[in-house]
Amino acid sequence: QVQLVESGGGLVQPGGSLRLSCVASGSIYSINTMAWFRQAPGKEREFVAHMTSSGITKYVDTVKGRFTISRDNTKNTVDLQMNSLKAEDTAVYYCQIQIPFARIYWGQGTQVTVSS
Image 1 (cartoon, rainbow, N blue to C red):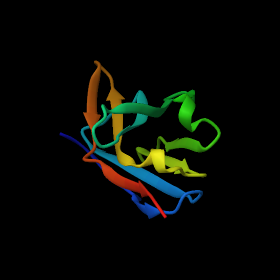
Image 2 (image 1 turned 120 degrees about the vertical axis):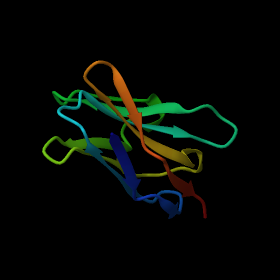
Image 3 (image 1 turned 135 degrees about the horizontal axis):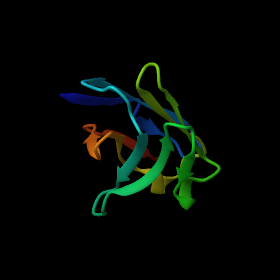
Image 4 (image 1 turned 60 degrees about the horizontal axis):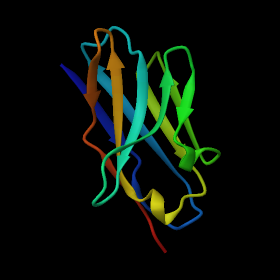
């Protein structure tokens, strides 16, 4: 079994920063892509950022220049540094990994609320 556990969510004022972390454990021999998604109330889950095993990153346009994804392949962790947070960043943030044979796993989510 594979488990993903996120941490680091919380309440922050507009313009503030948060760092989300996700650790993957279980029967994992290698991880292809590690990603973050988010789901705001009443909206569909959307892609935020990902990093491939070779270090290639991709971001949704709305977070470019503000969010930074990083990963540690030795620890099976992926972080999301979020700066200059806006009210519209409020959502539940989910960690996702893709491992060989197209298997995808999700974390349980962590709430991020940006409000004054």
